[in-house]
Length: 282
Image 1: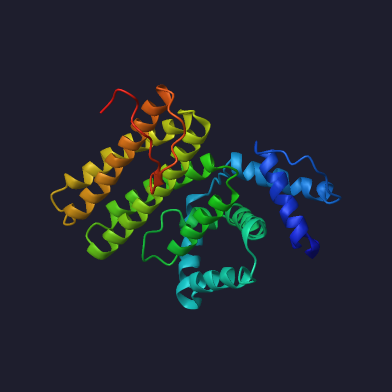
Image 2: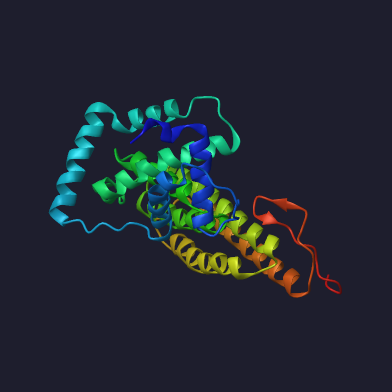
């Protein structure tokens, strides 16, 4: 691959083409690099729309996981990977330039991870496992490849579901359990904020459907944690449940505001736009 691909102009043009390919605003300009970038744009679009699935033989998965864990413990692969990514992104670039370069670099990494089977080997890793850092890096790669705020919002909610599954597995470790719930709540806020913002900006409640679906299943599972007799962190779990309830109220309030023709809210918080009350309501 030509190293010029990662030049500033090509990176910015690649980001524009990828946005357009996934339904974003058209820029009505052309570049001499468009032909060369077309193949990468198609790969990026397919990675975004059709999340790669890898059919991994169980014996291969077991052997690969064992090999990767041994390598990570021996050589500190996770730490080295994080250091390498930080070093690659250290140049003082900001705004769209940073996003464009980051999207290309992380996109290439995400494709390599998915196709090599490492993602499959790390998907069941739990906090404290040698491959857990790889699992979280794969999630960040998916976010970088997402083409819209709706896609990113849905991904954050998917990650919140994953964090809840992890919390159920580490519930006997109080510190670990609380840390996973912190990450789960952060993902919940990010996802809800992105989706409610899109709904408010477009005056279209469609994006709220994903929020409602997420909240219904997530709330049921969090309540299931509280019902376990061996659960020691009930108060911490209740805080996560309260966040889900608050997100549900926000989505409901936005729907009501749209139904009565209220303008897009100007105030916002961690859950996104805060709508005003419809006339005649208290």
